[in-house]
Length: 110
Length: 115
Image (cartoon, rainbow over all chains, first blue to last red; front, side, top):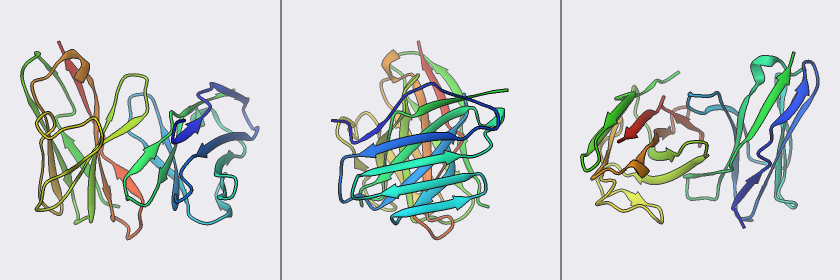
């Protein structure tokens, strides 16, 4: 079983819709969770970090964490074509280094 | 915000040779890491670069193949030794502690092609 799992997609949503990206992790001691966005040919850039159960909102982005279910998600409201990228879920199990999921490719259709 | 730079940005190398990649952060950071991203894949941690001591390598990565230095709190190098075509990847350094949090920020990456 992979430590961090994501659906590879592509996830296709129309412009203006809500995109929902999901991630599950296997290590219950995981403490910190991150969502990165990676455009083709570019390095990952941080979108959101979340450390405690519940929702965390930042602009059009909302991260949701449920440690009991070992599940973290990212919602993107009012999706724009510029949001088309690969979204990487990353988990810190306490070693301070990150374990990444395989990424979900999001396509926002104009 | 702090800037992380890498040199070279890309290179084409012959098999059997070695390449040293440099990572420079414009402010002191607590932790630095090196990742590899093979074509079409996600990021895999190679090692944690420890300041003033030997790097901590992940399973499947060894010091002879990927020697790492971190002489101070703003700089690290990764060498890819005795390269083969399988080493063709993007190599990324990251830094933690830039904003006082656990968040890792990534450099622009070094795109390596081994012929």
